[in-house]
Amino acid sequence: MAPAPEKRAFHALVHGRVQGVGFRYSAIRQAHALGIHGTVANRPDGSVEIVAEGDAEHLAQFLAWLEKGPPGARVRNVDLEWIPYTGSFESFEVEF
Image 1 (spheres, rainbow, N blue to C red):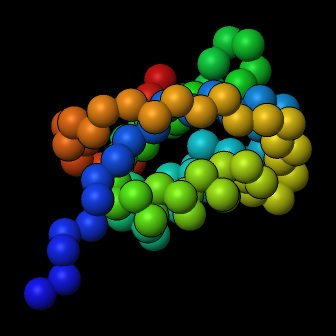
Image 2 (spheres, rainbow, N blue to C red):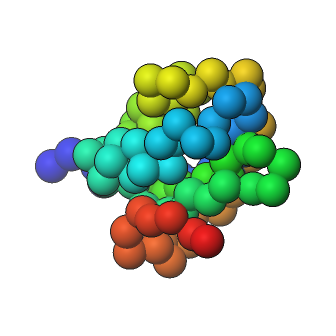
């Protein structure tokens, strides 16, 4: 029997032209496709904040997507912090 996938979590701030380009809703679609749970929110400074939890492999794929974003976005950089996995999210959604 294969071992259970490793569960991980991260907190990310995505900087660049990432508001007003559908970033949050594209992130939701991407997260749902990968089975990632957490939240995404616009911040007053123009960045987008993400808290994401899931299988380590799927989180790596999600992070790779965040570094590019949807068409129209211009990601300058992603500040990433690995945080403890909590399992407290039931889905991935916009936080207002």
